[in-house]
Length: 179
Image 1 (cartoon, rainbow, N blue to C red):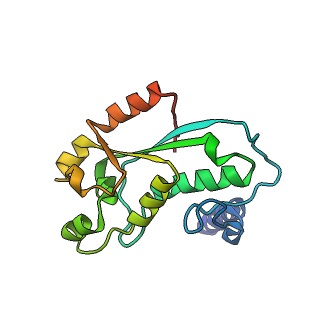
Image 2 (tube, rainbow, N blue to C red; image 1 turned 90 degrees about the vertical axis):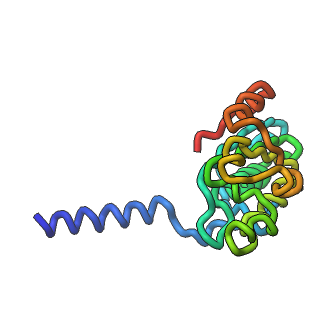
């Protein structure tokens, strides 16, 4: 029985590795050169006229010393869609930040006071803002984490709550990315 379990585990691991393929197929660009790695899918193209309005919700903080992976999803969304035919001007993204991710949208100086180091997510957040991604932080999570508007990375907005931000974005025609 133990041998059968071991074989089953091995097959499961090999199948999982095959499903994800070779991570060397992933690269950044064409919009973000340091963020948003994606794999080419040459069989799929996106009509250049297709409009995207998508909100992302991130409530989990970054791993220590790393940029927030949830934030990187927006760079990946932009890179992979532009690489497959979308026009950058036809992609409108919003990032709603709350929970423990709240500290990932504060300036280096404020982050250093709270965590003892510079904010590893600041460059990514600034790059997203530069490419017209709307970044909104939850006021309730900010209050819980003693974060004031003056502590936010320039361009990050604060709303009453993450729920409020999502309601407003929905009214503006944004869908919510389910991952």
